[in-house]
Length: 90
Image (cartoon, rainbow, N blue to C red; front, side):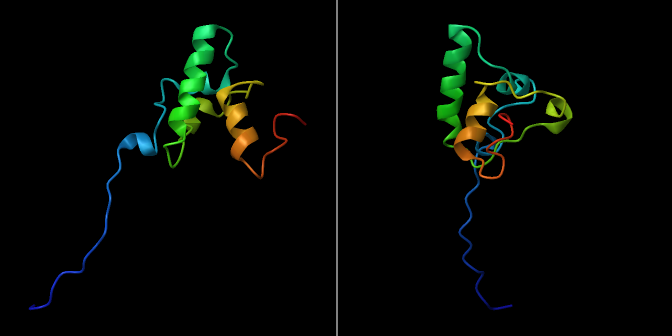
């Protein structure tokens, strides 16, 4: 075993890169903000999500939720989802 080890270029990312929203907060993504504080939270989250590679939707907690117009999910779908552009506006 005199060979050298391969040079792997591996980067370990923080959980926030794939799980930017924990399961406790997932409902907030589907609801339209109704207060200034909720709107600011939604705007901040959308900025934070730009640094994420994925958004885990915690299906067990979110599968029955309705995507409300103006919610974070509605805005994400409108901006990024090419196969579900009319999912909310059928």
